[in-house]
Length: 278
View 1 (spheres, rainbow, N blue to C red):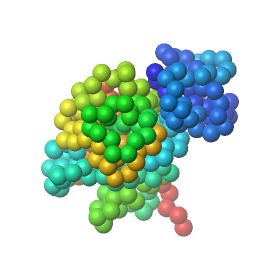
View 2: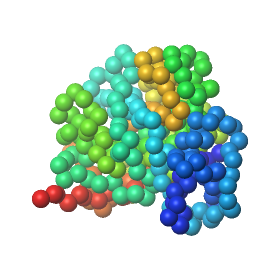
View 3: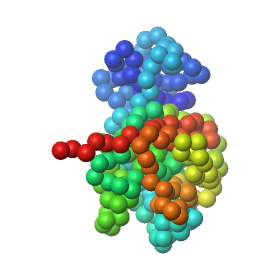
View 4: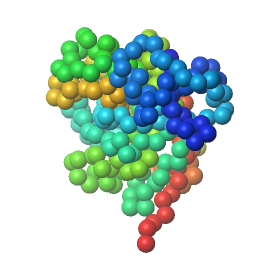
């Protein structure tokens, strides 16, 4: 199943994408996709007639996830290019949910940041809540997988040891286009992951290279903070980010970022320079 959130005729709804057709979920008056995840129901309830995909605007698949957990330095080569040591435990930070945007949305380059960077990432969507989850039980707590671009203002991020604000400007968490349910991904640790910037390949790796894999991430985070339905865990980015290049390569106005992950699809966004406020 491919779960989406979309806008159609002014209404925002959750739905299931089947080929080029959208089947609207039963309306909840809120985040329909999150309500389905939280319900624990394997079979969604639908309401209304199917809509051609071409008639809708896709939004972030989850509008209001409880939390977005980011994982830093989770590919060894990325840690090396960032000139940072791999830790004995996962490096976990938060991204504010106000930073979410959907596919084809503009990513705003802040007027008060000068080193904005891209990061292609596989994200895990939690289904069944849990506290102190055992690594061997990880799959029963996963609803599915999506794509996240962990956009980062490096000058803000690295000004202190706390990364959250540098990764939480508005539009700094593009997500989507769909959440693919767990059973459709045979092995999340064997997925090609690529990012192109205006047609140039910048990142090209495979999730088999993750240092801390999904069972370890779920076990570690839930040993401290109980996981909730709809929580996102963005598993980290492979090498090739602008920070690690010589010369360093920051995002510019009017560039197209495309992230592709096998089995999920493509997340496309363009950059737009924010106008300085008087």
